[in-house]
Image 1: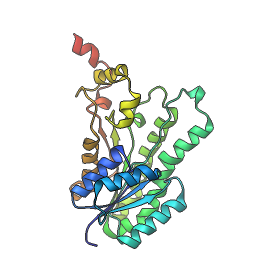
Image 2 (image 1 turned 90 degrees about the horizontal axis):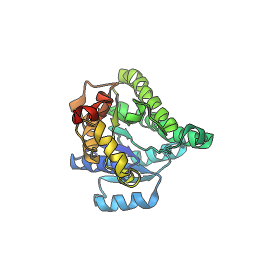
Image 3 (image 1 turned 30 degrees about the vertical axis):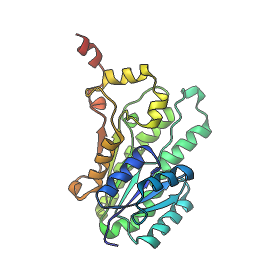
Length: 254
């Protein structure tokens, strides 16, 4: 019972699974929330640490399901020390093709989910003085085409992070956000053409995509005691993409 526990939503794959692996490697226990039963079960089996993991099949946008998951954590481990609100969805469409159902579902998962999960975990976080890390996106800091719902949801989550930090900070709970830039996830590999990848490389000073493990390192740091005086911040983990904007391509070719 002395081991710390983190809740990671969207833990079945990608950044969520990499984050789970990082926390386990650092001696934490992990409650893995995900809506995808088959993929989550496969992920847990691959970790092979049954004493330190808990599988929670959960839609983070449904309060009753989140409450049931938190109750299961309480029953098995009796504590929550950190929450990583990673679960998110995207649908890249022009504004004219984005219907209200698509908009509403993206908002429900990407914005309502972190609100619901944080509220449910707060009573436990208060006991230890824990931390919350919301996974936002460079798309919440910079507008782009085909991201009207996704980008807006992440921009709203950035402000929610600051609201949570202002209020929960008074109670000893730190709340910060990590904003990944282009990351070499399985999804990115499937949907980013060679032309898209080249475009990103041209505007990222480090000239590459990030790795899931690199995002996980930032998440773990903000959740740890080493970040004990960091609250209400948005950390872009993006190779310099957000800071530099445009112009790198012409400079490199000059």
